[in-house]
Image (cartoon, rainbow, N blue to C red):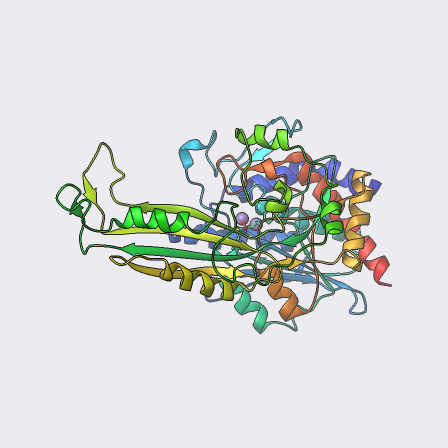
Length: 462
Ligand code: BES
Ligand code: MN
Ligand code: MN
């Protein structure tokens, strides 16, 4: 513990500078205009792993962006930790809402980060958190105290649903063999109350298109006499929730895991201030499914949300028009034991069935994945808990997150191992939003905590 603390203390400026350099490359996987930058980022990650003492580091070609793989096997009889992370980032838009350019990292203080935070797209999700593992490996190889084997698998398509990673995992089961998967791509409650993410929600993401007349029409000459696709789409979307904010799709809740009163009471013990939550978002009240608390609504309950809606005239001034088409992008966050493909089908059938005569409806599925819950009695969880307790001097709390890392359920299916999610970000770090940032404290604390996980995991595996 003292060792790693002093190593981080000695090298922290370099650790920060290296991350800043990585954040300068705009590895936006969703936008093909950035494809060379995404590839350059993979190269940079590969080099960083080599410098950190990783062996057999390679860029594994896939139908999409390359996967950076590397390993350090010290003894085949010792346990193996597989580290997963992603080097791609979300698009930065709306760029005008950033206080500094998204790919020109700067360090600024915030209320929750008095030691400063690095502002840049990907600072927290996930370049900063992924790079903590590279630096933790550097410490362990430099100081000769890597206690077990390690493999790295860093992908470049997480933010677009990991299409190539499933391809890669299915074809490389032997290479990826491990005893536990370790990910830092989630958050914790606060810098004084660490938590370990024990659950992720699943996801079904679809796009809908409503078509009315075969061309845009004069809204005076035709208005009132033909179905307006935008009006209809709005009506259809409104029907997807009832007055209790339950989702109305038949069969949607059939497989939803209901937590017991005891489990819900246990969850409610995690520190949370509704007032602070509302204040941070400038809202006068929260909103959601009846009979559930805010923390239940955003973790153990499924949701349906419109992520974008468009159609018709949105330019300057007014144009009198009835559009031919209207569109929306809709995400459904799922919980155990909903099946994302089944939910996608249920949605499609229902959405088609509620369309009135006079319009045509098309539903196009994008991507999805299953929810995931990791047990807290596993060696992996216990080792993570011991690591946090040692570095923060506070026992971490298990927390189910509302976010999704769809590939985690697939890891369990294909590689038969549990995933431990040691996240060091805060919900307020604005991932996917303008002004994403990652606290310097969090970054360095992550680097300090990770080697302790290796130590405890190896000891507990004996
Ligand atoms: N790292 C996030 C997921 C996350 C963040 C989980 C915080 C828990 C806490 C990941 O990069 C992400 O954004 N996932 C997407 C899904 C993906 C298929 C685009 C998500 O949750 O929207
Ligand atoms: Mn992420
Ligand atoms: Mn993300």
